[in-house]
Each structure stands twice: as structure tokens, then as C-alpha cells.
Image 1 (cartoon, rainbow, N blue to C red):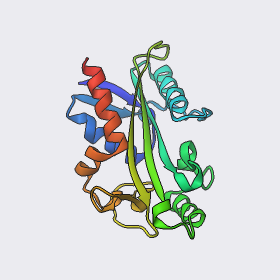
Image 2: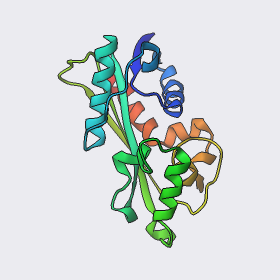
Image 3: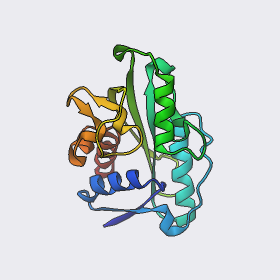
Image 4: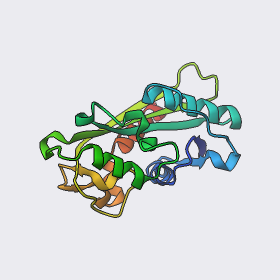
Length: 196
């Protein structure tokens, strides 16, 4: 199996990456196993932030590295929280903090105007100086609910309504979510690119 360092400490992301990539004979190891320090996400786009994180992990480990930058874009909030999704309510914000702020900002916004989408950009670098990193992306359309539903997933999943399945993302079994999600789409695109 090929070992790839994942430039993330998010346990939800690690779980999803491992589940999706295990069938492709890729051993995804979190950067924490190599004591890779976090790097400031100073980019102004998902692509820039994913590149920064992947390059940092490859530099510290001398192994191929992969990073994703993902978030939710809400039309009624002019695309916010976007690249700031994980820290919407502040640098040390929890999922609950972020979701509470989201609901507060959407107070009084009717259902038809609560359209949203998850974005995911995944970057794969063979080494820190890779001049042609692989960049893959996925998008998942939905809308924001008024109250949480379901126990699965993480982040905004309890509030992200999936119209095709008439439920929140957090109500989907993980194998179904992995088929539909922005991250699942991006990972399958990456797997396809890697096999070529």
C-alpha cells in the first residue's frame, strides 16, 4: 500500500478519507503521527489553503501529501462562511459555536432562500516542490435547515438538507454520504487521476 500523509487533524475528515481511500490501496496517515506543525491558512481560496497545507506536510515528512480545504457557501450570506467555515465563530470555535452563529445570521430567512453548497478541494503533492500538484474538487448542493437532524457526520452536517434524499447530511449512513458528498466526489476524482 502507498502511504500518503493527510494534512489535517480533523477526526471527521480523517475518518472519511480513510473509509473512501482504503478500497484504493492507499494508506492515509494523519500528519500528527509525524508531529507536523499546523500551518496558518493564509490563502484567499480553498485551492490556495489546500496547497499551503499539503506543501507543509510534504516538507516535514518527505512523503507524498494530500490536503483538503472545504467549507460551506450560503447564498443568503453572500457565500459566507466559505473558506472560514471551520472558524466561522472564531479561531477556537466548535461545530456547535459555528452552527449557532449560522442560525443566528439566517434568522427570518425563508426556506427557499436558504440554498447552500459544500465545496471541497483536494490537493495531492508527490513532494514539497511538486510543480504540478493534482487538484480535484467536488460540490454538494443543499439548503440550511432551521433545526439540527441526525447524529452522523460533523461540522454543518446536521443543518445541511440533502434534497435528493429528503434528510440532513447527518442522517445519512456514512457509505451513502461518501457517495454523495463534496469530499467523496473530490476523492474519487483524485483516485481516478492517480490511477492514470
